[in-house]
Length: 392
Ligand code: FAD
Image (cartoon, rainbow, N blue to C red):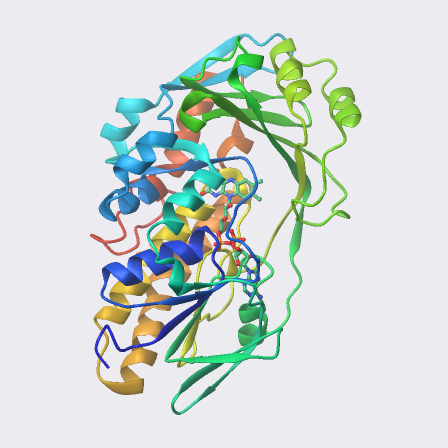
């Protein structure tokens, strides 16, 4: 089996699955992607693409496409939740790029998804096929779908998100862990919030909630996420819309700029925040996991997508460098797990209480300690060095 004849199947054409397909193609494979949705699309709002992720996309030749739609914010402005006074301004832009070796972008999830989808031939993405399980045998792996059909491959990559069927079949059923909060996310035209410059990112930290805003769509839109207390009964799905009246009431005494931002959003999504305990293993002889299927994490480090990109290039490199026969495949998947499981578990653990959650919003020092917290994650170059030790 050389690169071109190893049949790799990817379940899920989200950000992680498409990145895996792009990285596998660069490594000489011809992966086939199976997606449950009938059309290839992405919903949601803004996404932070940190340097550890952006450097990998640049190496896939995507810097030009990213620059068309993404923004490289100049500063992160920390504002008092009630008066809106700016109390700290963390340089981003060129300073961040010099520090971490690649840009920090903010962009719309749908734009990133489209860029990644364009890297995979349409004929390799098979829509309307919901994976229901898999079975390994001496000759490979059979992938079963809800329509009663099945496909065969030499390797199956489960990139089917936080509710992964492949994960459940591989590791058993474990319950998601509810964080006690929800993310309310939306996007508004920039002209409706003229007091927020599309050159910057913003964070307001209040007593029980915080609001982050960042420019997307080349600055034509502002995306926001409000992290609020929640009961967790709604589940983690874009299908639940935020209640505009409830949102306005919850932020009634906040900075008028926050109130205008939230009021301008039509159709914000309400997403209860869950993650899962790390798995003890995520690879078998023929099957492995990637992205949220492998290591769902809370969004406070803005790392879910970037960790999936790291997975993608490491997996492709392990498969490209595998030994002979089925043992070579099993060894490559074990090596991939070895290189990624501990690192992603650590990022997940730190993101539970870290990132923007540490900002009280009143002192410069809090911002620099937040930057210090995440530096080891963002500086990491997964193609050049083994997983780094955490800063603390
Ligand atoms: P998904 O994007 O969930 O894709 C899974 C795909 O698999 C979907 O297309 C789905 O339809 C398909 N699928 C599911 N089941 C099946 C099946 N059985 N068969 C076939 N197909 C299937 N990350 C960042 O890097 N930066 C951020 O700023 C950031 N902000 C976030 C904010 C919030 C509020 C949340 C909740 C997450 C955030 N993330 C962020 C995390 C990031 O969105 C995820 O880590 C990333 O989307 C994971 O991609 P994925 O491909 O693994 O999973």
